[in-house]
Length: 513
Image (cartoon, rainbow, N blue to C red; front, top):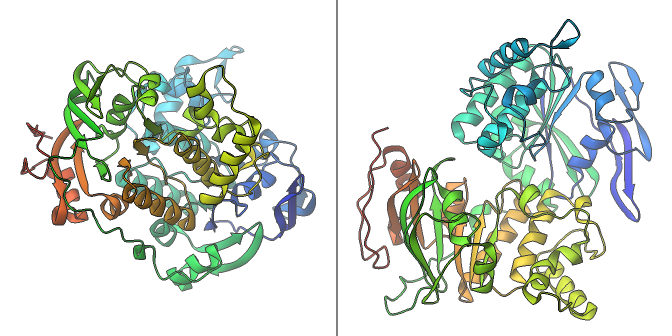
């Protein structure tokens, strides 16, 4: 790709970018959110028209009118957000549009047989006939990757493929990538996990603000230099963002939220949880441990079968999210594409959406909308700083910031954040973590979920560890350490201490797995 430029109105998303990809290599494409990574991929695959520049594939200049033409030419793409059909089976998603046929009709047996071969290649133990929406986001992402690699492709583009995967699933994906690289496939790999860049990539290209910063051999690129190239300023390390945990909250301080024996059949076993003003309580565990399921119960997105939830001392029904919002509880989902982003609305409209919902039919005056949008665009450094920009045209990280702004604009008492930094670049991640720390210092209660244990430990005053959809321990103070959390996740052995738990009476389950 040479001299690639793409503009959306006055916003120049790419400005004369060069990018080259060789057969049999893994090439990491790095940059902050808004740097132009996704735009470059979509320019290559024909999603966006190119205003200037040329694309050459196997020595011949190409210009694709859409992803179908790119796929026909041997370029397969897996995007960060899962773009499959949840109402279809796993097998149907894997082979959609490529089904084997017999006597002019789709060969159902052949579809299932081919699907089993693809799943076996990924070492994914999933029933091909099961509905896709019955599986976790992690499994859906692996199915999406399986769909991409089940054809003989020259170029495989992986845009944040590991954002929903646990360590074992990432390791398996990397084994698949290594085999494809050995077969001569050119792999473009986008991630915000620096460890993964150094674990799998041969070369790295960095973009910033739509421009090329440089191309490097990954093994010769120091991590600090990579971070500095991405953010355009010197950063010592992300670890400098250290939050001094608060003093243990006094038992006399009324909790913002208290959940007692909250459970949902098939989702999570009974859990007690206390969050006091100014506390960050982390939920830690592997994918499938019950983190998201608990968060959804606390917000009323799912209805609990047992237990009681109180907010500021008042028992709430929590039958719907409206009950939670009315009580001052806010929630950002891990699946922002399906449960948060309204792409066809502007940044302003998305920010004031929750405020407007709380007011009902009484419309928020335009001046108040402008003031709210301007304030949170500045506070969260949303790029571009244009309240009239359509949200779908923003990068994933900036969309996440807009969702945070939507809830912060309501002035919540409790903020539940499920994977708020997933797919977020280094600089934006530091900004969001610093914001969480500031909100806690100002007295807001926060429930924080992240697959990155270092992130949970850095921010949390207390950490509830979940395993196999049940609580195993709650850590506080000096016990909040990555090694201790990992040990509990691995073994399920906890030594509960009622004083550290904020006075709640607990019974810990122990898994035999």
